[in-house]
Amino acid sequence: MGDTMTTYFKILFSLACLSLAACDRLGIPDPAKEAAILEADARATGSACRHAGRGIEDCYALNPQAARAAVYAGWKEMNDYMRENNIAEVKPSVEVAASAASEEAASASASASASASAH
Image (cartoon, rainbow, N blue to C red; front, side, top):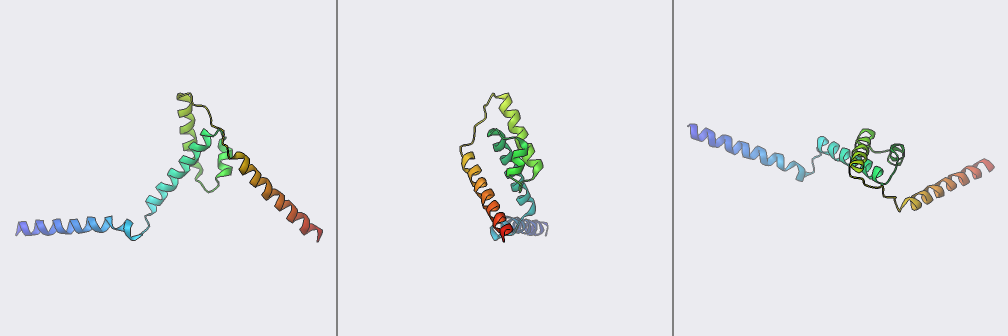
């Protein structure tokens, strides 16, 4: 009877493991996994900001959706790494396009405000 019970528990344990492994495939959200992904993304954003020579405040302003603590952690890690290895900043080449887009948005906003006040 002891062998049957052990076999029964082995089968039950195997089924439990399989059902847990299938949760990802069924599309059941895992809040802990999603939080870890968002934190890793924010840390990568902070690292990229520092590598591009941006200040932490600029990084916060450019990425308002990212968690500030994680952005700072990534920024600081990259800062330390760059100092230790004498790595120079890489100036972003899309900065001109981004500032041009923000200027267009600002001018559109200003023209909308001017036309609204004229009426």
